[in-house]
Image 1 (cartoon, rainbow, N blue to C red):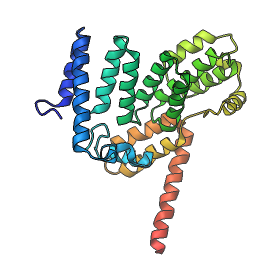
Image 2: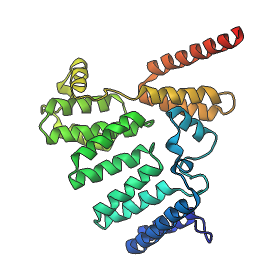
Image 3: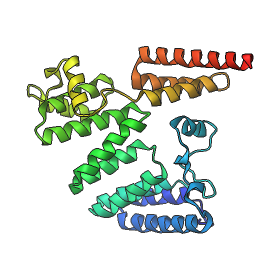
Image 4: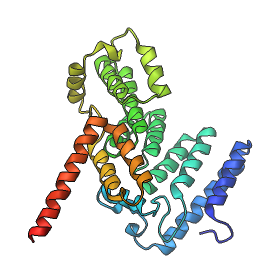
Length: 285
C-alpha cells in the first residue's frame, strides 16, 4: 500500500482537510488513496476470496471473526480500512454535488464491509436522490436481513414509510412508522415523520397492532427485528461469557435492543437446551 505512512493516518489527514474547508484537497488525497488501495489489492491478492471477509457463509461466523479481534474492516494482507476510505470519499463528493461519483464510492464501501448497514442506508439515500427507487428499496430491505443495531432497523422502517407516503400508500406508511416506534429507540428522523403525519391516515396511531401486522405482511415487510441476528449475538455472548464478561454483556444488550427482553430470554433458553443436547450426544458417543 503506501509504505511512507499508515493509511489510517492519511485518512485522518483527509478528514482534517475537509473539516478545515479544504474539500478539494481532501478529495484529491482520498482518490489517490483509493487508487493505491485497489492497485495493491490487484497486485497482491490474486483472488477475491482472499480479501473479502464477508465470504464467510453465516452471520455467526462473521461475529466470531470480530470476537477474535480480526477486524473485518482491516483487510488481510492489506491491513487498511477500505470501507472508511470510500465512505469518506463519498461524503466529500456529496458535499461537492457529485452524486454519481459519491454513489460509486459508497458502493465500494459496501463491497468492503457488506455488514455495515449504515453504508447501505447512506447508499440507499443517494439512490433516492438519483431517482433510482428500486435500488433505494432493495438496499433498504437488505438491512432487515443484516442489521445488528436497532438504529439501522429504525432507519429502514423510516425509508419505507417515506416511500409509502410518496406513493400514497397511507396505511403502509403508518404500519412502518408503528413498527419503527415499537423498537423504542429515540431517533430524530422517526420523531419528525411521526410529528408530520399526526392526525392523518399515515399516523401510526391510526392502526392497531393487529392491523399493523396485516399491512406489513401484505407488503412483504418484516414487522420487527431480525431474530437470527439476535440469536447470533447471544451465541457469541454465551461463548465468551467466562472470558470477557464486558463483551458478553454488550452483545446481550444489543440483542435485547433488537428483539426485546422476553425474546432474549427465550433465545438464551434455546441456546442452553441446544448445548445440553449436544453435550448429551457427545457423551453417548
